[in-house]
Image (cartoon, rainbow, N blue to C red; front, side, top):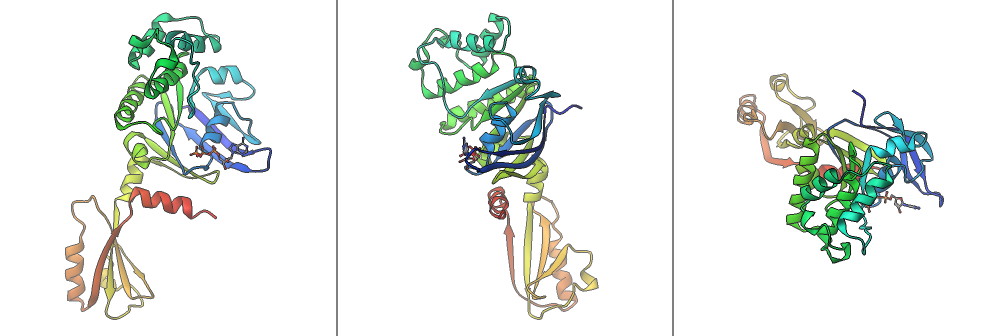
Length: 308
Ligand SMILES: Nc1ncnc2c1ncn2[C@@H]1O[C@H](COP(=O)(O)OP(=O)(O)OP(=O)(O)O)[C@@H](O)[C@H]1O
């Protein structure tokens, strides 16, 4: 299947000399919700801006549904909707005219029925004749989304859609994103809320200092995160894991003083009681037992800290 977005070997150095993206390769599958996670300044907005043709790359290519974002800009851009991070709305315009105008920018013929549907879906229909300046912050954000959807894009980018948004609106936003996906739209959102990625995404990409450090199915990631470790501090150091313990997922650490047993925290049977019994049977004494588990947060922090 053709990827919705294909980014190949993309780099961006800003005029001042700062390299914001380094050899980024990324494919977004049609119909998925992809969350791009990264700390402040990691390059999320730059990546989105290059993909959407707003910022020129220094090298590399971007294709949207097969269209080169530079050589076939209009074709590529017309299938993309972008909701930027900053609220940029025309204060004096009415909701319906600003949204209808956006559609026209993409060279699409007017379609009042589509505009009505978008406004209804976003609970803005009752406010269609209000001037944008009269709306609350949350409603203005919805207007931004309505504008991005006005030309019926197949791919929607949401740059930090819930930054500074209250809990209720955040839930609404999540629901709306799911509904859009159900209607066949591919969604790429950036966030630094791990919880948001966990809640929403089919796949998660982590970007740090301009590099994609991980792309993974959310469920795989969660399974990996579900791993726990039991550390058994031994009375006497071992030089190797004894054969009698070979059925267990063990590694030696601390110069043979600790046996580390890795298990799936979500599994029904960890095998730990049998393992401890077996230790006793073969005469291995221990001083202490400790368990630890990495949270999504910890994994994320270690991923983004580990980079030089
Ligand atoms: N126009 C520009 N000129 C020079 N440097 C820039 C420009 N735009 C962004 N940068 C730098 O590029 C880096 C990446 O910025 P970017 O906005 O892409 O990060 P981000 O991951 O979206 O961050 P945030 O989560 O804070 O929005 C930052 O160090 C930023 O200062």
